[in-house]
Length: 548
Ligand code: FUL
Image 1: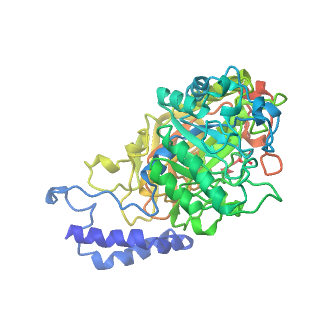
Image 2 (image 1 turned 180 degrees about the horizontal axis):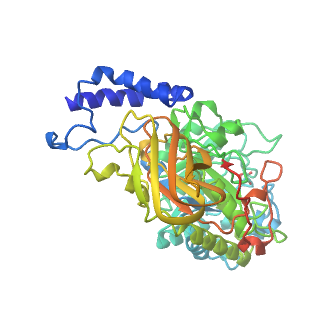
Image 3 (image 1 turned 90 degrees about the vertical axis):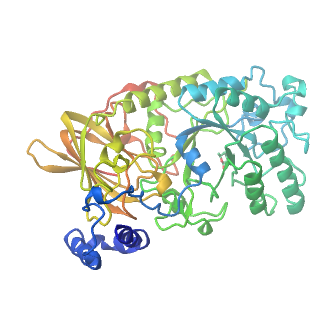
């Protein structure tokens, strides 16, 4: 009996979500009446929450996942949070960004190259993966490929017997950190570029070398860039994707349009404040994209394609002697707007011409890591008393308990009872606390659900006051707002694709952000702040309610 009711009500929830969404303009009272009406046929059946626990032998099952959901490897990728991008090649020695493909290999001689240093810097600064430009658009290969002599084999570095991909793969393995490779489709050196069949064979030959000789590869980054008036040709993407998945089933493939990870649509590392991992791959072609669609994703998308935010620590992707790194506070701001908006941050830190990551870049990464730790190591809600508007399952069932939101990780979560007309978590912090950052996570292995939410505090006059509104959560949502003080909070989900599930809720104090005065847009991509600004405390205007 109970089981039968369960099936029926779950069907209402998972398959009729457009219906539930469309109810928002009539909420909350009329929605309540509507649900009452919906549940009339089942009224003679005991509700799953109100039936006495003694008459049931079995556990309540978890809620249904809501499609699309991530693959195991998309999930592993997402949990990395941040990765380091390494642009390195002949451009590093010729002071260029898009090499012509005609640079003499003799220019390539990074005499102090130490891949273990790259790995150490990444690991010590909290990054979980490195992605190396094994071949950039100039066609020079950082491994001794058998398909061209335009590679490290023809350079003076290690007398032509070196292999940078090999050294990095070894160092990454030793340190237990993931490796990704960038193999540029556009190749300005290779004579067969432009001959569709020949070049696709050549490219697949190179890709096969990279995916079979160096152990585990976690990401294959396929850049869609190509200069104007270049030879026209077709890339056999479907064959490339199938081959990559066959040779490295654990690797995610990045392009403008997935299949596994999509580009965020800008090179400033900034995601939309609404950002879905849901997406329709068929709406986007590689190289022909609608930036808005990439930035925001698609609440009714059929494919799971989360976004990666690539941005360089310096103005250029390659190292140039005249350029300086961004400040730690700028990186922190980018972190909030990438990893804090359901994306992964892929931060480019280009090794210099000696083959090392420069001391000034290391210093900035160290400061950035310290800023992050000083903000996020103390969840001011860690000892809060929690209650919820409703909880799925029986009282003794801890799997759906509101306290799960205080546990780290996405696999434990609070689940409300089905068919509710309000979804609220109440936090009693047991004392008055000041804070200005909210962190929320969804158990994305169950699908991305939350569409709109807000946070309220009980003010000194015992009135509930809205602090911040947000749209979309996903893997991780970080929101900053003017500092507020309270003992009692209400986290309210206003709109959701299905019953919302929350795996983490935290509040923090950020003394460092200068978030209101950094402007990013497509015309001003690289904002430079003086390195000394990173510890400055900017007083906020305490009167406003922020909307992000
Ligand atoms: C772009 C390329 O043209 C840049 O050189 C760089 O590699 C960046 C990550 O992608 O499309």
